[in-house]
Length: 522
Image 1 (cartoon, one colour):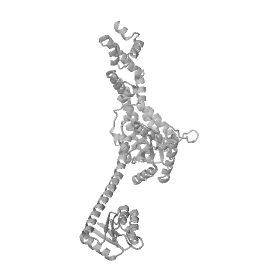
Image 2: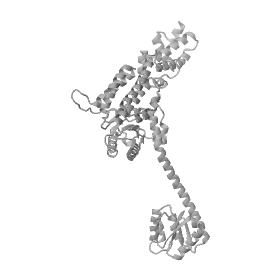
Image 3: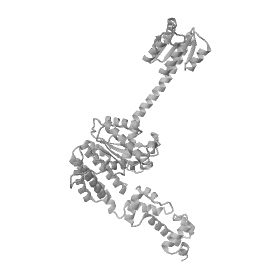
Image 4: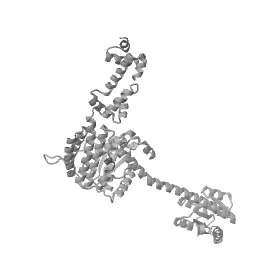
């Protein structure tokens, strides 16, 4: 259906156009008429007019003045001028105003019919363009939260510390050089209000800056913040985050807990930054507050001889992680009993207890994966659905205890073996690749652990640092080649991973007391 407005101060002219249009387009059009520019503008304001036929010479507001107003009110309207004047200056002025066609009176029936058809095509094209834009926006509104959640799911649940997430950032057109992660714990979230709270929180955040926001996991939300350049200074950043936290408390509710990671610029550290925000959250008192990575929360004074329940719980958690790392099953079980009791005292409700236990298990699993990269347990896949369905504290405690036992057992088995599988894998790679780059970074990538952890573990297992171990392996291979083959010293230098023959010769003499050539001659 097309809404057409005919504007002319002569009724006979209006009737003539109505007759032609109605006879040829009756079922497709709805006609409106006006005898002045003022009346025409009133109709334009009240109705969605698609096409306007406008006379120039009218009392009061002229046709061209009226066209100028229509362009400001409804710029997509198709306007056709009909005038008894065929002067060039009128036609030129009309065209300058964006008029589609200038027709002179008396009107020709075929010209009117053809003009209406052409105008309808223009309207159809504009409607199609608007429809496509609206449809695209609706799709974006529908899928963007889903892709945000997929990005966050990859961050929260990935077992790979260096998972490449750059494709998500490209999709969201995020090019900010620095960024940070927040983990928010929102009180009073239930199944009934979870979606509304999520939508409100997402809206409030994105009214301030661009954020990627996960859906709720129990009562927690992860937030990725691409930091604008003007906020990249750490102190300015903290001031802005505190302001945002205050807005959240005002609009969402008091008692929100917020852990903020450090400012990062390496896309490979996205998952590490999330874990950083999660660990920082554990410093925040259970009645709400904000903590930044690397900053200590002020301690809360308690009754003489007693510690604050939050501090006690945090200390027990650290000790429990320590027992886990060394595979101490009995120590871990004993500490968990104390930890669980402390959690029950410090958590104000069941939701906070569940959230704290989930946080603990995720951190415990990450610790285990550092020692046993191949570790897996199907119960971790259903972790959140289990906690969402189970409310009995005794059942929750038993469930977590079972997982702790499994985690400790996995680490204990590795440590009880003759050689740690991680170290065994690294040593095998060294033996097979003595002619290649064997830097600590390369070997850490081979083992799929951090350079710090590999260096520490290697020293514990082999009682020497990894660089010395590689050097000794290379020199032993060189001695073998000098004794058993006729390769030149230059070739042996390359076979053992050295580029400088003089440097290789110095290392060889330091170890064996003879230069390579002297060793071969003897």
